[in-house]
Amino acid sequence: MVTAGVHGLGRAIAERLAEAGLGVVATTRQADARAAAWAAQASALFQRPIRVARWDPADPASDDEVLEVLRGEGARTRVLVNNAGPFRRARQSLADVSLETMMLLWQGNVGGGVRLTQRLLPALRASRDGRIVNLGAVGAGAAGGWTGRGAYAAAKAALASLTRTWALEEAAHGVTANMVCPSDIHRQDKEARHPGETRPSGADVAAVVAFFAGDGARFVTGQVVELAFGDRPRLLPGEITESPAAALLPAGVHVRLAGDARDYEVLQARTEGASVEYLVRPPGAEPRWVPGAAVRRVVAERGRP
Ligand SMILES: NC(=O)c1ccc[n+]([C@@H]2O[C@H](COP(=O)([O-])OP(=O)(O)OC[C@H]3O[C@@H](n4cnc5c(N)ncnc54)[C@H](OP(=O)(O)O)[C@@H]3O)[C@@H](O)[C@H]2O)c1
Image 1 (cartoon, rainbow, N blue to C red):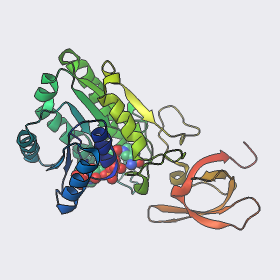
Image 2 (image 1 turned 180 degrees about the vertical axis):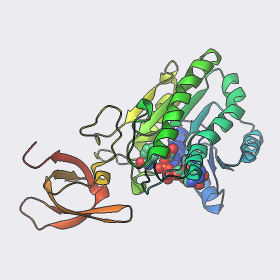
Image 3 (image 1 turned 90 degrees about the horizontal axis):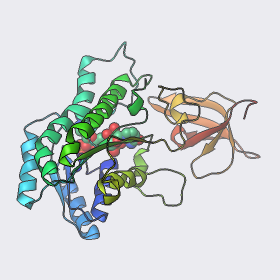
Image 4 (image 1 turned 30 degrees about the vertical axis):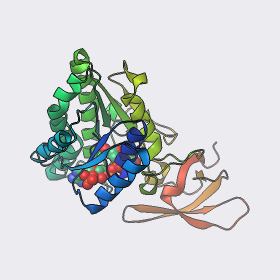
């Protein structure tokens, strides 16, 4: 069972688990024709049943629909991946964030998953080899602060704590609980695989989830694992940073771009809404504008390696 398993990282996880030989139920708030078409195609590709179930973390009644799909399949859940998790791209400080937004992020990232986990625990326990894998975000395990994203960071930190409690409480039932905390994976990379490239993709996250779901992790529980992809150059304890793109780089720093080994000097930054662009100069070439998302890491600050 992969919540929000039809799109984004959830899809990469659902496909990876099917590839590993599991039948998969992927949930989505909109179980439409496109979701069904993906499930049919992926089932054929991986030769495993992949079904779609409507589920909304904010709607307790939808838990019954998920259980109905499972009953229809005659299937018993052994692995539950709590992947659903709304995020707010626009930054908002804790001075301004509404309780409504905080509750929405809580419900989507934590509350709904707790509810569904409770409903599926009997099956996970009955399998004697149950696995709960939760999707966090970098810094969640340390309950780090995150400028402008405090509500989301708090929800993920809560989920890290719950992961550790599930691990303790369910050990006697043979159920493990672990958490995978990725750094930024951009929209176009979530459902992709980039073997041999330095750029991370959904497949890299899915591989770690599959490890926790697999035989090799039978005795691994209570772990909160970070997939930071080298994106956090000078991290203070307890502080969450995003990719350099999100931090608005000052002029004069040198950066590397995705899939390019040259150093680029940042000349200028400009923002439009939540997106950032940089005017960068590669060695011996004309400056050009690149999207902030293309910046993978800072290699030097002005006058300092
Ligand atoms: N991508 C990253 O860089 C990144 C980094 C760190 C952590 N994560 C975590 O990894 C998980 C998957 O990330 P993702 O980037 O693939 O997800 P995403 O594109 O941001 O979407 C999250 C999914 O959650 C579901 N959802 C349920 N309630 C929602 C609500 N109220 N508002 C919006 N979406 C809602 C949606 O699926 P349906 O509409 O299909 O139900 C949606 O596809 C999340 O838990 C996320 O927090 C992602």
